[in-house]
Image 1 (cartoon, one colour):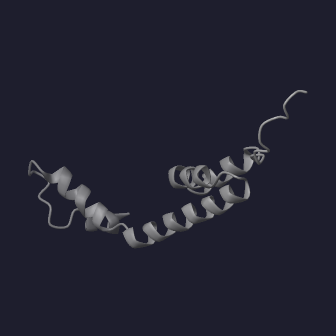
Image 2: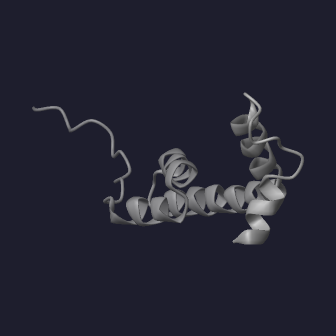
Image 3: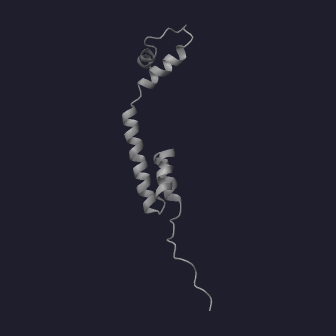
Length: 92
């Protein structure tokens, strides 16, 4: 924890008015943004595949985009869409 705090406070004067924002930006710079992007893309692709299997492709992708892998559970709990069979027959 001390190492993380030291890296976050690197080059920051604690008495400066913008110290909070500098610490915040230092913490953001430590995030693995590329890995987070590719994992999110994988989650959305898997959600779209599960949604396609359930007849709800866009909905599956959106749930996975918002909730990640938890969105997969949401789309799997929804009932399958029945293919539209057309209008009922006309009476004689």
